[in-house]
Amino acid sequence: MAETAAPHGYIHNKDEYLKRLRRIEGQARGLQRMVEEEQYCIDILTQVSAMTKALQSVSLGLLDEHLSHCVVNAVAAGGPEADAKLKEASEAIARLVRS
Amino acid sequence: MAETAAPHGYIHNKDEYLKRLRRIEGQARGLQRMVEEEQYCIDILTQVSAMTKALQSVSLGLLDEHLSHCVVNAVAAGGPEADAKLKEASEAIARLVRS
Amino acid sequence: MAETAAPHGYIHNKDEYLKRLRRIEGQARGLQRMVEEEQYCIDILTQVSAMTKALQSVSLGLLDEHLSHCVVNAVAAGGPEADAKLKEASEAIARLVRS
Amino acid sequence: MAETAAPHGYIHNKDEYLKRLRRIEGQARGLQRMVEEEQYCIDILTQVSAMTKALQSVSLGLLDEHLSHCVVNAVAAGGPEADAKLKEASEAIARLVRS
Image 1 (cartoon, each protein chain N blue to C red):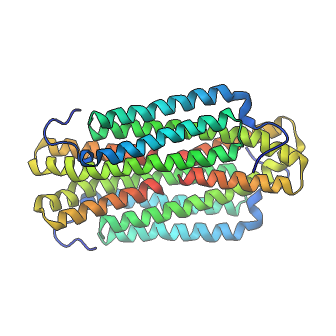
Image 2 (cartoon, each protein chain N blue to C red; image 1 turned 90 degrees about the vertical axis):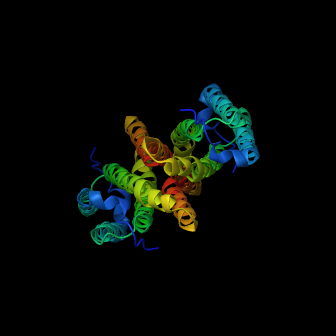
Image 3 (tube, rainbow over the protein chains, first blue to last red; image 1 turned 180 degrees about the horizontal axis):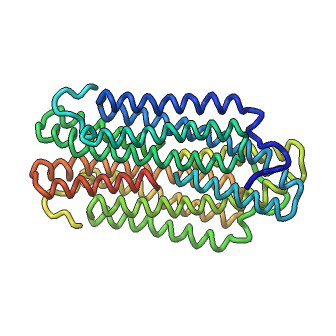
């Protein structure tokens, strides 16, 4: 559902998110190297946990920005748009909690 | 802790793990594109959850192989090596559960 | 931080939450019985996972109600109260995602 | 699947597990009291996260004991019993990671 009006919350921090996602991409390549070199399972698992934590913190950042910009703007505007935005945010939170 | 003797459990499935990790690397690039193009926060969060699930299933696969090869071999050999291997596996499981 | 003004979001569903929490209390007693009777570890672990899921869904429900009532009211009132409420909600979400 | 032969791993720590599960039961009652008294949503969510962590650590303890007793005994005995026990342990770990 494309948000037309105000820019999304994360955009003022766009470079920071790109930097973190590039690092995560690097971690994915690093895992491939570890498997290529047949490194020890537990060492690979340790890196996977680190990458999962990095992804988790990106998602918590995006969610925080979404709540304080997109959801706040919709709530300020009121009406069905606000309800849809809140429902959507809750569903995204549920996906995060359950992933 | 480098495992010297028997090859690690996952090695007979090495190509499969490399393929899945390349896909995860592609997902990381896809997320960068979404941020670059300033796509909607919720759509990005949905992709982050999908990538987290993909990572989770790689880790569960590696752990399963580790238990049924590295831990089994150590248990069969017995002695302190087996205890160390079991402790190490439990710590890796705890990191996974808590990440 | 006690919310004085509008009643909390979940209160209109209070009986439902009490029912679910009583069931969770029953699950905790059930686990004690399983341990008392020295039942098989895996069967106990299966019940622990079920209880964790039940707790998770209570927390997602409470969070959804909190966003759509307490946070919305604070945003509508605007000012520092709204910022505090959003920050608090994000921290609660982070605790949930990381637990 | 009832384990007939050796006693389950956790039994030598039975009292400790019963104590922790009684505390978790108490937390469930505490949550009911908080809802009964219409306490603030975020304070209730904080307690839910604490209870989830307590459950998580019970499950990690049980799993560690299961690996180092039930799985080790089955591996020492060898044959299909060992494979079944390893598969079962991996499935329990997957449920924990995904809950």
